Structure formats: structure tokens, C-alpha cells
Image (cartoon, rainbow, N blue to C red):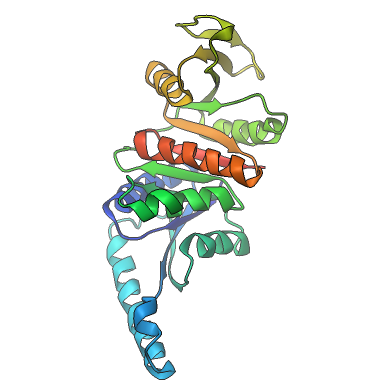
Length: 269
């Protein structure tokens, strides 16, 4: 992962995630390109003559470029790439299109709590990006602090399509010297009262371990595992499912992103 795209809205959550991204890039010798997707409010642009709209867009672009320069000040450690001000309407779609067009290896974004009813219904830009990105997306919670990544937990539900993702994750872990832990949270009581984890050595690779937890919710189980194992990064696979399944997974992903201090790395098939 040598080419990282970092979209920003200049928020506090984004500033924290940028610090995380730059420190990660230094550890893995990667470049971070920073982008802000800007636009004009529809209410303003709809009532303007085209010439004035062009002038407003040019002024907006200059303002965003100035903010990008301020945002990245002090981050010139050799791992900062380009700073891009890009016009767009649907932010998450413009981010995913840019990631695909310029062949990025990873997208890193900041996350924060839901702010209003519209966001609760439609989801955040980060969540939508996770659902559609052509590469893995790393969501960094607002309260997360960077430490060298030594332990990665992969939340598995034993899906057959896990294998390519696991292979990619293991390559990533080897490149940064981290250990991968596999964890499955079972919410059905039928398997028994398992208050402790069961660990199986060498599953599915010699350098990993596997744990099975029984908890009321998946989030509760993962939070317990992350705390007990001192996990630095949680990874999960998000298959391209039917719409109703995607809505469920989006809801779950939002909960993980907004309520955890641990960064979440999401893979697609």
C-alpha cells in the first residue's frame, strides 16, 4: 500500500485522521494525497447566470486550495503527496471515482458521530465510501491515536469469499510487522455459554490465532476482544450483497466506525 488517498472536509475528525494517516504512511513508506471535494449550494447556483457561477467556482477553488495548504502545514515529512481541490456534487462518488481513476491502494478517512436525522437516514460520506470504494478503506475514529500497528483483528463470519481478503490482509500485516488475529462472534445461545474465548493455533496461517466468542451482539464481542487483545486495527470484509443486506451491513459498519476508538479497515470482494 504505497499510494494513499485522504479526503478531508477540514473537520476536527479529519484533522485527527490526517495525523494518523501521515504517521502510518511514514511507517509503511507510502505517499498521501489529500483531496477536498467542493461545490456551490444548489440554492445559490440555480439562480445565477453561468458566468457568475464560473466566477464563484473559481473563487471557491482558491479558498479550498488555501485551506488545503493550511491543513497540510507541518506534514512535509517526505510522505505528503499532492493536495487536490476537486469540484463535485456527490462527495462519496467523487472520492470513489478518483480512487479508481488514479489507482489508489488505500483510502483513509476520519469519522465522527451522527449529527442529524438526515445523516442517520442517508449515512455518512465515510460509510458510503466504504460501500463503494475500489480499494480498502481505513476509517479513523475521532478519538483514535496512532501507535505502530502490531495487532490486527479480522472479524470473520466464515464466508468462502474471505480467502482473497485474508491473503491481502496477511500481506499487509507482514509488510508492517503485525500479527493477524481471527475472531468470530456468535450471538446464538445454542453453542453454549462461552464466557471466554477459544483459541486455535495456526488457523488459517501459522502466524495467526483464531477466537470464537459468544455475546449478545457482534459489537459487544468485538469490543471485548479488542480490549483484551490490545488490538490496534480491526479489519472486516464487506461483500457486495443485495440491497437489504447492504443496508444492514452499512448500519453495522456505521456503529463500528462511530462508537469505537479502534480504526476500521474495510475490504470489498
